[in-house]
Image 1 (tube, helix red, strand yellow):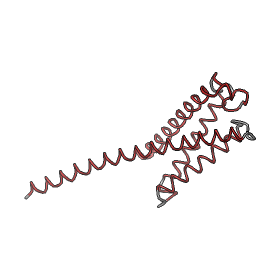
Image 2 (tube, helix red, strand yellow):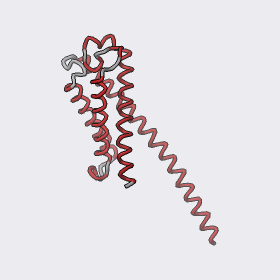
Image 3 (tube, rainbow, N blue to C red):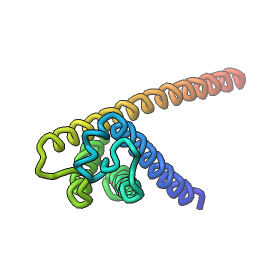
Image 4 (spheres, rainbow, N blue to C red):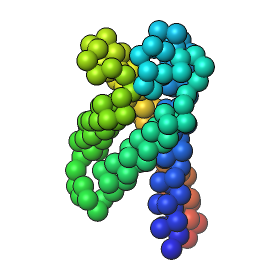
Length: 165
């Protein structure tokens, strides 16, 4: 039962974290380029004045989609023995495809404007790069933590075996 709760809690944490980061990133982008994008409509249609409720809900649905992708790709059940590198690459590819789909379906920017696409691709790539860097830092910190715990455990085991002699 606790494992199910843990998966559900992680799922919602992932959604909320992804949603918060997305809203903040889009808000910052809108603050910088809002005057330029206001005429284009779409995701930054309100320009520097903020985000519409519709845009916020679209970003929430996108966060749900990426959280589901993460659960599917990083669970042992469906991807089995797939290397972490391949899981990560597939996650990036599918998330990018979902972002493109959302951009087209929800008309986040004019789809026939190459400059808008270039800006979109640069921002998505920067987001993925930041996420990967955070994952690497987190993994290194966890590795350090678990290495220290293992060393402590081994030291205790050695001390206990010496005390028995």
